Amino acid sequence: MRTRLLPLLIVLMAAVLLALGVPLAVSVAGAEQQDVVVDRIDDTARFAALAQFVTVPAGDSGPVDTTNDERRAALIRELVNYYDVYGIRAGVFYGSDTPMAHAPRDWYLPEKGEVRDAFEEALLSRRSHDPQQVWPWQRNRLVVASPVIRDGDVVAVVVTDSPTGAMRSRILHGWLVIAAGESAAMLLAIGAALRLTGWVLRPVRVLDATTHDIATGRLKSRVAVASGPPELRRLARSFNEMADNVEDVLEQQRAFVADASHQLRNPLAALLLRIELLAYELPEGNEEIASVQNEGKRLAHVLDDLLDLALAEHTEADLRITDIGALTAERVAAWAPTAEAQGVRLIGDCPPTTAWADPVTLSSALDAVIDNAVKFTPEGESVEVTVAVEGETSTVVVTDHGPGLTDEELTRVGDRFWRSGRHQNIKGSGLGLSISRALLAAGGGTIAYDHHEPTGLKVTVSVPRPVA
Image 1 (spheres, rainbow, N blue to C red):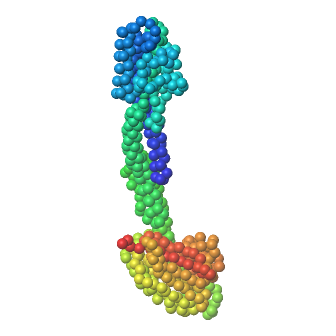
Image 2 (cartoon, rainbow, N blue to C red; image 1 turned 90 degrees about the horizontal axis):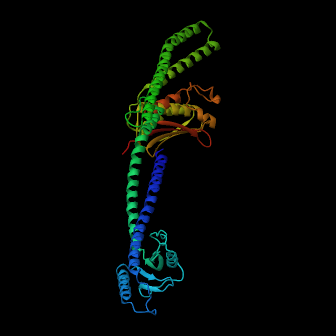
Image 3 (cartoon, rainbow, N blue to C red; image 1 turned 30 degrees about the vertical axis):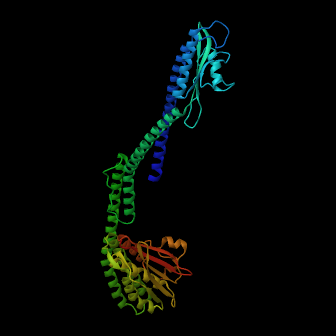
């Protein structure tokens, strides 16, 4: 869930930061250009004031006006100094495009372009429009033109053509500052998102782990409700209440099965004894009395298995580091005479392997599995018992060459009282594998079933290995 929630929060926060950062970057660029434009307007106004009374072009016929020449010379000096210091081309041009003064000396009005458009607009007695926004990746120039007005008429136009390198550098610097601030804010937002998702999902992870513990048989597990959102804390409390109720119901069920099994054993033993006494009064070999005795013994066996199952579900495993190979070899040796009596070869491959297991529990589980394998294996076939290591678990695999089970039957094997319809005539109560599964689950072990090709059943008993 965290891998889905965290990217969503990061994308939302990035969108918010972009929504704030992009307009701010545009505003910084606009403010930098506006400062430059205002500065150029002030400069053109100053040059227009100097050129206001220089009205006669040099070289025109007429009396010599010494004052006018001095004003023109002063204007030229100002423009030259302006160009030398700032590198900004500037000039004052009459309406006929004739320059009154300009710097550098080789700069004239072009036939077309931005400078020409600004000049013609200023001839209409209007300052030129603000130039288009210049971005750091562009090399455009800023052109500002102002009319020179005398007695209400436009007598000339002041034009400045400014390079934008310094302005673009300042804009880029401002953007880098904004980017650094956005990056820092994004890092803080990611840190906050990590803390937030951790705070929100911690109770969910604990709830998931506790659910898994209860599902695998550790019914005492409960959820801590000390942290997290109020809704999840309330869910944790409700879950604990549910777990308490389920544990109580299961405990009552186990107690009922154990008590019923125990209470029925005495009357059943007495009934079997009376049947034995009754058999002495009947002719020897009476089939009816023999059938009654067999059914009574079978019922006693079922009651014993029920009591074992109830105790197995309630007993806590005594885990210790156990040599699985040696224990399995011991069980193979114990069952070898029984297998030989039925004409079945019991083969063991049990290398030394350690694991966490309850020796008594594992022995009981192996007894049930090997007993089933020998019981259902035809005469002349074999049963193989193999001990192996698979990652963090040690396994005992028991394979036989019997009739095996269908896919549907594999999903049912291990259920209480379940027996295949093809094996109803074979002795058993259908509880042996259920008891084995309950005993193994108490110690973190598992039992699994699969087909064994070409025929037979493969049973895998797994127990956890000790961590190095």
